[in-house]
Amino acid sequence: MLPRALGPLVPGAIVRGPTHDASRPCLYVTIDDGPDPTGTPRWLDALARHGATGLFFLSAPASEAHPDLVRQIAEAGHRVGSHGDAHVSGWRSPGTVRSSFERAEEVLRALVGGPVRDVRPPYGRVTPGLVRWAREGDRRIVLWDVMPGDFLASRAPKGLADEVVRLARAGSILALHDGPSAARAVAALDLALPRLAAAGWTFPALPAP
Ligand SMILES: [Zn+2]
Image 1: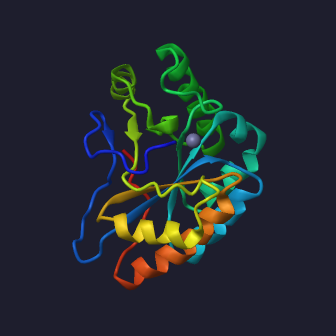
Image 2: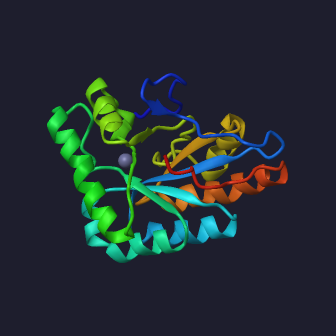
């Protein structure tokens, strides 16, 4: 089971983004585990529907298998970050973990034609070695403070949306997923974002580090 909400203090990683305007709180939408031939088009449509800009944490093998989807993500104005090589856990050897992220960065850099400096470790597993590696390479480890559990088949979109609205704070980073659960996550987003938007929220991309 993944943690739904990480504590606010994970040294060397962020769980919230910047807040600029107290009257217009923002929520940063991040999407892990893509690209996916079924899920990613749903995500792109949904983000466009809500005027939201996402940050997609993509894996190396899926990006190599679906380079067109990676380009579509970037061309639609969304940002991409590294989710490593085939979901390598942060508890593996430090060298394996680092090379996993670096491989995804390389693949993504070539596809989007720009630097890829945001990293999301699978399962949110952060070690001191990973923090050091990120700092030395001018990278940023991006965790989250809102993860409603869209990957659990037992969670219905309505419950997921309620949890997003309940947990969102100005600058919150929302973590959802591409892949087999994308339809459920997108349905939840379709319920949550209009409620937040009606209360003045905006959904910009997490600014580059
Ligand atoms: Zn993942």
